[in-house]
Length: 446
Ligand code: SF4
Image 1 (tube, rainbow, N blue to C red):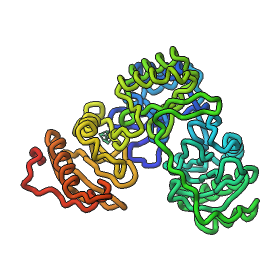
Image 2 (image 1 turned 90 degrees about the vertical axis):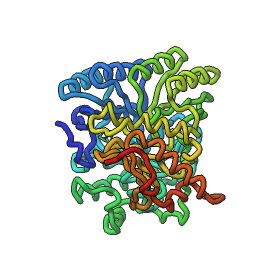
Image 3 (image 1 turned 135 degrees about the vertical axis):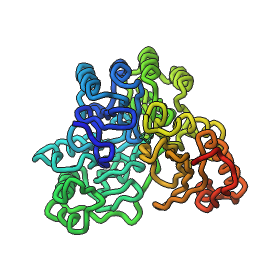
């Protein structure tokens, strides 16, 4: 079965690849939290053999292989099975990528997540829910999951007490708090809420739950009232070193715009293996975490990753950019999105202050689609358009042909610097920036 690219809410998997502008795409979420280095290298080899050699890690930390055909997608699935990888099935119950290794995380996190998985796997519940419905169990450790949306969320209110905030819809900031529970009662409450979502049909999500659905929890253990203030702890990007409970450290590395060549990933896995890595985990924000390398050798790992163009510093401006593959990898692309994005990061890194996301999209489909305030450069047959958007409103700032994109961005950056008041972010300035004058030349968009 192939998912239509227009079927929003569809999830590509090994058995149901999705059609994109560069062929079929599959997303791989293994049951285990990490890969042995040679197994991840094996997947990259299969991606090069059967796809176009591009491997991606998504903003939620899933692995994607691009550029497949109907026939080669089947061969890839066979190779993945031969590597002994068991794909995750059922409702995703996500935890931090440092689960069970993080000294700051609530120690009940992994067991609570396992109990929820076990409970919701019964009664055919997964089959009655839409493919994107997910549960997050956030142990409130070094890498929180507040930036990820979930249908049902459990957040440890502190490290050592057995108090979990139950919430529905949204991300860590926008979710609807329901109440506070202990870890013994929480799985039943999660299942009740998932049943209520399922009862609304396959397109329903956690955000659709209303007061009557929440009231259904009264039939089981009742949650205590939620605290007036939710202790939101913004998660750092998973780049750099993170202390582990065993006294060692994990090293987080980011893929530039979430993508790497299979050959580079194979080289990275090979070096990681020789440096003693025991496991490689995928993390949100397009990152990977190297585990098991002795601290004194982590610099060697980071240096190699940097040579491959990967992100090794949490302040790297490329982390503020979402770029799709664009041309030539994707036939729908009107320009080389990632090349343009890399050029902008190089020339205008200071403007990428984290207050907005730059989205470089080869066409109107906008596959990368970041959230929050965004400056988008979107390709179309008539030329590229610069759009600034906040609070679901978008307006056009400039138009350019492909060669005019860099000069147009430079002009916008200059206007932002000129108009910026002390203490303003670049997102603030972009929100009130006037469109560039029509007589400014940025190529010849038709
Ligand atoms: S947004 Fe980018 S990757 Fe998606 S179809 Fe368009 S050009 Fe291809």
